[in-house]
Image (cartoon, rainbow, N blue to C red; front, side, top):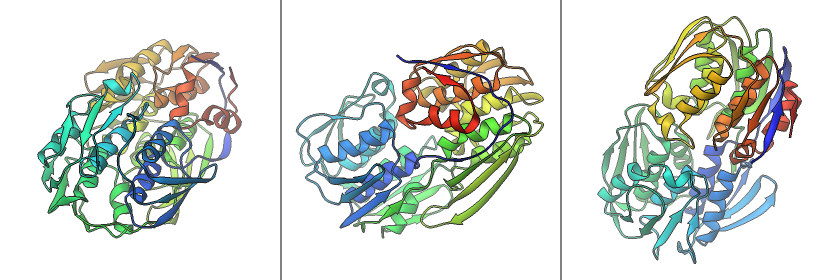
Length: 427
């Protein structure tokens, strides 16, 4: 386990570029792997999660050629069998997308495994809907799981939770199922899959909370992956929480299903400006956030799916806002790489915040000066990045244990954060 020493920062003005979007990178690889033809994906996210998907596809017989640090060429078609178990490592996206991909396509039984953290994360929410389509998958709850490919029948799925991973798994299965497959969610989730399917020629229909797909082939699509808004969020959170600071992020994705965090920053009182420079198949452009005096907000279940990865940062910002901020309807945080609700509560309590943990979120009363503390990433990249922001806002030095977990999504984050914000980061 690596320990990093972090120091506080004053006001800053900076411009930043962040790596490619992790969610889009997973989907660009998977969808081109089942498409006809060859495509080039540029701006591929550099983290361990996307590497897990890439390596899994290669192990299943997909031809993927590295053309550069963040550029690959994918040739569609594979034998969809593996000589040994497919290691999804720490990536829930890899595991869940592969379940939907392989259920109608695996030509021999394929077993998915993962690290200790992933092996505790729930898979029933994906397995049971796939079984309703006649998929042969055992066991139900957690990895390791074995998929035996067989013909599937389209199904109308009405989900209990809004989940882009679950939706994508079912649409991937539906592309090779008899009839149509419909996914209806209780709230809007990320629509990267639907956008790419449309651009690649799939028979897909979308409404606000509904997506329907019919069996059919895809055309390979060259994709320029925009910067990851979730990777940009720590920089923007610091700017919002440090009055008088301003940070601009260039070339970042601005998909409306991902911009809930920007809406929350505006609600807190930060000045947020966006400029879209391109829109197909994914909108992207520039975001500018300027810190100001902040007021507490209420974060409810209607916006949680659009800001789920950024809620640890919302908690930090809440400590600097006047009044009581409540985050609720976010029980999904307990099922991520860590129990993020408990991790947020423990870390902020160590820093002197006034926080009360709820079953599905937390209450934070501010403003409260944060104090440097000994912090832990808890095996979770989002928590690790959030504590780097917390340390920058605090008085006095902090330490972060488990900093290596940040590599899951953003290997150069600490170096980029240090150079852009000015925080001292020493191993």
